[in-house]
Length: 164
Image 1 (tube, rainbow, N blue to C red):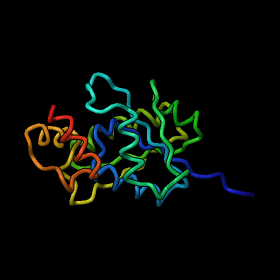
Image 2 (cartoon, rainbow, N blue to C red; image 1 turned 45 degrees about the vertical axis):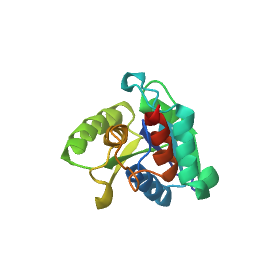
Image 3 (spheres, rainbow, N blue to C red; image 1 turned 90 degrees about the vertical axis):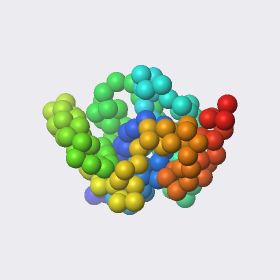
């Protein structure tokens, strides 16, 4: 009997993707057959980049994963999206204690709503534990250098956005 492929979902706003996000994503790709990156449509956060731009940043940063890396957007419950795509795992990165408390609540609610969908938490690499998309945008908006915190394409795109 052939084992079905393991499919994980890595949800986030990724506005923009950081090297910390990419670290978590690459590690998830080592653990699972495929990972679906779901880019949140959360307009409440007033995204700086379009969904298409955010997806392209990730594709450009991780070109070698081909069909093992998929992209989607969704509106509604994450566990419903997972079930619709045959994913049994939600991947989340943890930077600090505050992340744990937030993720702990969501993990338990997701487990209650969909007992067959588990959460897997990966600790952020120590080089990226303080980096967030919000912080990167703030530093870039004030003219600071975010090289090494985000992919090169994002450094360039941030400079273009804030030059205007």
